[in-house]
Length: 419
Image (cartoon, helix red, strand yellow):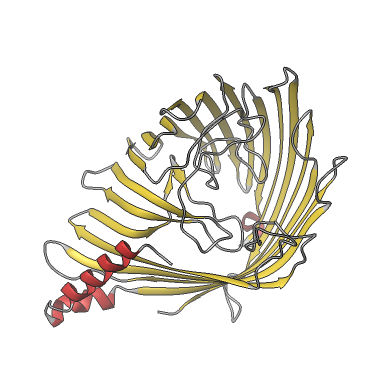
């Protein structure tokens, strides 16, 4: 359940809203919308290295995601409320195959997956001009905090987030997160920093304060730059800068440049020390897109980010993030959109990444590579409009650290607008 403070704020907002005139209530109701997403998820991961503690993870589950967004009451400060209801149901699992991230798992033997789990998130929102403050359950999509939605149900946070677009081209964000509910849990808990033997990050505490602020400016239709700051109290401070530039070449052709740099340092109770440089260049030609990426870690540790979230890195992919201590990695990617030949909704992606120079604690060098393939189709019209099917395949191999694995995910989703 969402934090009691969030619920109190929401109910206070609703109570205040009921005092407004009928005209004020009209926008609150008229501009509201609700959506139900059904997500059927099959996950299979086969561990290939010798001596693996578990031979495979193999689970199947059904998710229900109900989202509601109200409009705003009239007045200088408009009031509104958002809500999200999440329910996950086990369809197939066993103790020797659990742990895929689809379902919560018991802490004591035999560590069975739960039959079901659920979460209710409530958010009060306040709007003045082009600025919106949200308090309660949040699913942030910011460079410093990218809530993960790669399994049955999304990761959620508790906190406050102010977003402002008062000035043309300029987007400002600021706020604080206090608790996290990971993707296979109903419980809110303190936040951690991502660790791992090859990342070499040592942290002696968790944190219930993550402060963030950022600015993004769109100079024109081609160029956007941004700066973001994040501080996970007692664990790390982080500064991120990024630039994207789209260069039109001719009709149907363009070159996109995506540059990112991050500096992360410890905040008292960790050893975080990292500089992360990334560049991704994508050339598009009709329905084709060809990408080349490079990423370099330096400093005493790998890249730091909140545990369970996605990392703001060009080489963060299906399984790995290629962000271990001193790691260098390359990416080659190809995408094709079949809409260019008259089949809208059908897309294909494949990529290959290779990383080396990983500084391991025992003094040896680690290496790794990963290959991904995605095929997805979303029905565009007719009685099954918005029904989507996606197959995701990954292969990972490593030297001197980590897991060797083959993975397949099959996701069938259906999104229905309720109003």
